[in-house]
Length: 213
Image 1 (tube, rainbow, N blue to C red):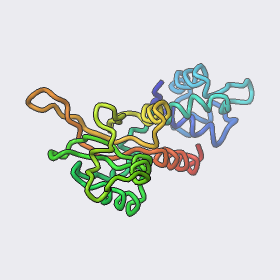
Image 2: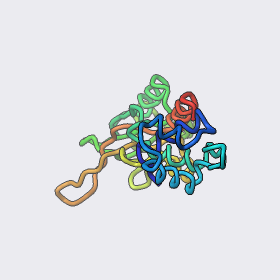
Image 3: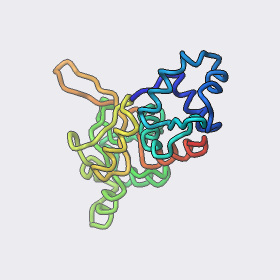
């Protein structure tokens, strides 16, 4: 359910000033009580507010889950994404490992000669390879990467909730954020424009908590 700007404002007023009467809310918003009645009815029936006779409106704590869900659905991946670390598929494993630690990242996104996504390599991939007898100075990173189409991605317009579901369901630390293109042959190509990780999500929750949600 998407709330109107006025309904959002009503929630803020009741959350910080409740219990508060409808007349007082109308006065703050500079509208008539009659004009406010439909909004108050929607918020009450949706579980955000509780109306008490001779007391006024209070914010329902059990409605917090609904509010949190609504709030998170307002955020898109583009609002929380960070810069990706990208290497070409002919880069050596050694150089990729150095990049991993220099950039302090959990995963590196690998692109082909046209700079489209072709794979992802993680700390675990590097660990398994370096523990063996492979010549990591000569072996290209493309040998050990997870390849398309076995890569879970996020779009810039996906909601944060959708991204979190993918991270949880597929048990990964983060996702490449991509834009999709169709080449002349009709094949889909993905351009990496960002990354969304558990850290990005945690930072969003911290920001929301700091703002009083």
